[in-house]
Image (cartoon, rainbow, N blue to C red; front, side, top):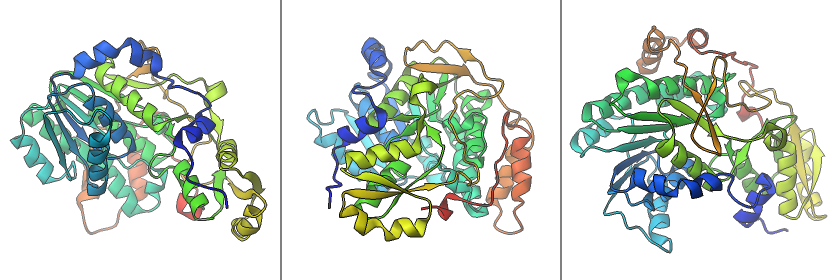
Length: 408
């Protein structure tokens, strides 16, 4: 059996097809500006234990903040982040460093923000970010609660405590012309980020993302798990995605949060002709990196049955599935309907000016809050879809009756 404990650098190269960070030019040119933005500042990172949050936190810790507090619901993520920060060659030199296992929308979080000295910079990575999160009404309500309702509550607490002169929250490419409720919820989240009524004076930015290769819960991380467990790989046909590495994801957020122009939505400058990659080709390259020749299947049962015999021959089953699950798009895009490019001030990140929806000025948020907070009575999913569709530009919900839980 081939060794599936693959070198991360080799895996990243196989997927990204580049030898150095795409964002290196800005990191070099803006080195002084980045340090000036962080040095001596009090920084709060919410959702800092996940893939993108932890990659960003590692970079911030090297820029001499006076205080760095990390909030995440996962105690395990926080423990690993602390070990990673302290175990690096340079260690951790931040004088005031704390980690807290909190839900960012809970009353305990509100109390913490009222009791804590004002933070100059707040970065928020808390989100449900998978399209599969709309598979049933309960998952949908939790996604809306996390991405929108609790975010509003969190912003109100920040405002009351005077926190976040510079505020950043991570968005998604799926917020541009969304076809999923997840993407639409993140588009509403962008409204929450930029709403003047929820902010203290200062700069507010967000970033739309490419796929982060081998991040927690990602398709590519799933490839490695399938290899380790001797199970088939699976990828949807004719589906193209942009990719960045985990380290690059932190670089995007560092640049966007600290140097992005106020009220701008930033995203990577990636050439669709060369960087929009077919997932089946990416899966094939991962298999080749693991020392296997891909063998394509269309039936899940046949792919499962073929694993052992193919592995003995140095080959591996790759199941190709139709792109027929609710909300999935065949390609990624970063610029939505009615949005126009503006100067980002950066070489490797482009930007659009935020275009507010009418969600915060109409009754849509009240409808969503009511749906989330009630524990009885029927939930009108179509009513939620219609309400969001009435305010989100370019939203066309793609409902097929199938979810990613129906796929390998």
